[in-house]
Image (cartoon, rainbow, N blue to C red):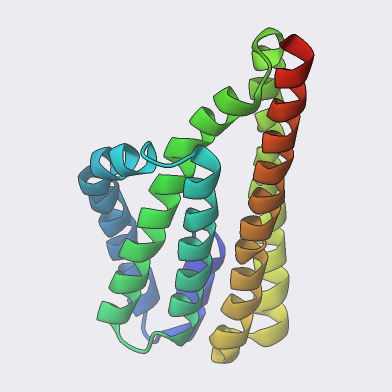
Length: 177
């Protein structure tokens, strides 16, 4: 959102409209966060954190395609709002998820290890730049479909993590009973 999308918009629109559009979607992103964070966090807490994270990976992944197929500004706005909803759900549940899976004596280690997720902040823009260089702005649908597929991979990964956690908690329950 902060590296590939602005480059794509700058290349795919004429006469500097991409810069204006990106500044508008950044503002829309912030406003959307303000309006949806509290209700989404309350809704997300009704389910396990892993389910909320899986759902957010699907939302974010499917809306990434929206950036590549949008032909009008309002379509970019809709993609931004929906992407932001997935983003808020993901990041508001992440700490809860870590708290759920970490053994009490290792919580600090688990939260410290979350710092490795910052690696995605390096790899994501790199991958987006490579795709943008290869496909160009004329094939945004293909480029964002690839990025979407990578994002949606979070769903099956979290699904298997949730299964592993359930198995681990059952095993620990037998050991401590």
